[in-house]
Amino acid sequence: MIGTQELIIILALVLLLFSASKLPELVRSMGKSVGEFKKARIESEKEMKEKSEV
Image 1 (cartoon, one colour):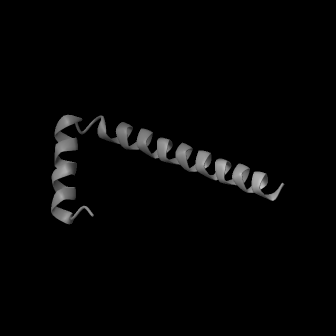
Image 2 (image 1 turned 45 degrees about the vertical axis):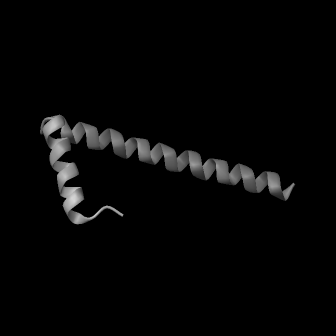
Image 3 (image 1 turned 90 degrees about the horizontal axis):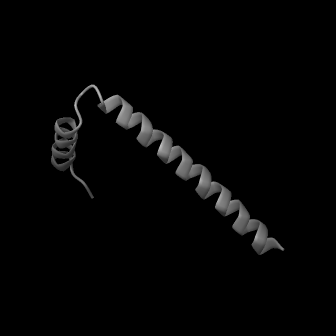
């Protein structure tokens, strides 16, 4: 598990690699990606349930 110190170091490196102006755009795109992943996972779970019921 990632501790507090490691998380702070990672965030500092991200801030250095991606300038502060690009950081909101990066976080927004990551959020969209996570949302799409959740939708795909839920859809595949529904399909698996439907197939197992038939």
